[in-house]
Amino acid sequence: MISRRRSRPLPRVELEAGPSAPGWLLHLGAVLVTAATPALAAWSAGVGDSSPAGGRFDRLGVVLAILVAVTTALWPGYRPGLAGIGAAVLISALVPREGTVTLSVWLAPLGYLGLRLNLWAANTWLTARVELAALARSARVDAWVVGATVTIGLVATLVEGRSMVGIAVGAVALLLLVCLMAYSRKDPS
Image (cartoon, rainbow, N blue to C red; front, top):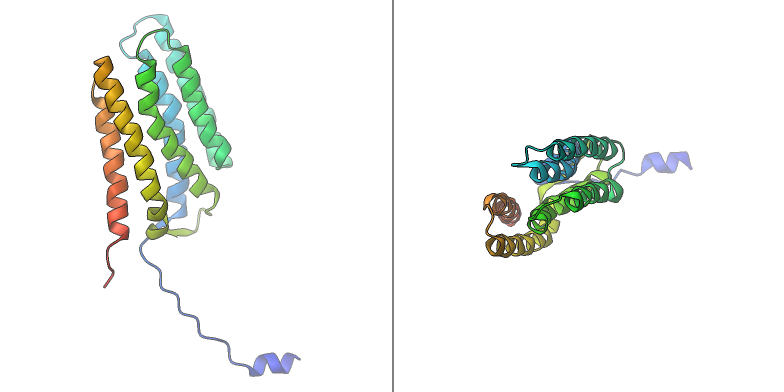
C-alpha cells in the first residue's frame, strides 16, 4: 500500500491570489474602531460641558473603551462588537442634554464598522492574509448600510441645526468603502 502511494505522481496545484491585507491589520482595526465607539460617545457627551458631569462621562468612556478594546483583542466576534455599540448607547442614554439622537445616528456607522471588523477578525488568524476582493464583496452591502445611516444622520443634523462634523466623518467612511469596491472590480490584466 505504501509503495502504490509513492509511485503515483502528486497533482500539480496552482494558486493565484490577488492583493491582500494582513490578518493582524483586521484585528487592529477591530480593536481601534470598537474601542473608539464608546470613547467618541463619551467625548461627544462632554463637549462644551465644564461641569463635573462632563468629566464623569470622559472617565466612563475611557473605562468602557479599555474594557471593550481588551475584550476585542482577546475574543473578537459578535460579543465585543455589540459591547462597543452597547457602551456607546449607554453613554448616549446618560447624556442629560439635547442632541443624543443625532449623536446616536452618527455613532451608528462606526458601531456597524466595528461589528463587521470584529466578524472578520474572528474568522482570521493574526498571521493570515485576506484578499481585498473578499473584503470588497461584503463592502458593497456595508456601503449601502453606512450610506443610508449617513443620510439619516444628515437629515437629523439639518433638522436639529447642529455641527456638520459628523457628515464629514460619515462621508469619508462611505468614500473609503466605495474606493474598496471600485478597486475590487478592476481587471488585473
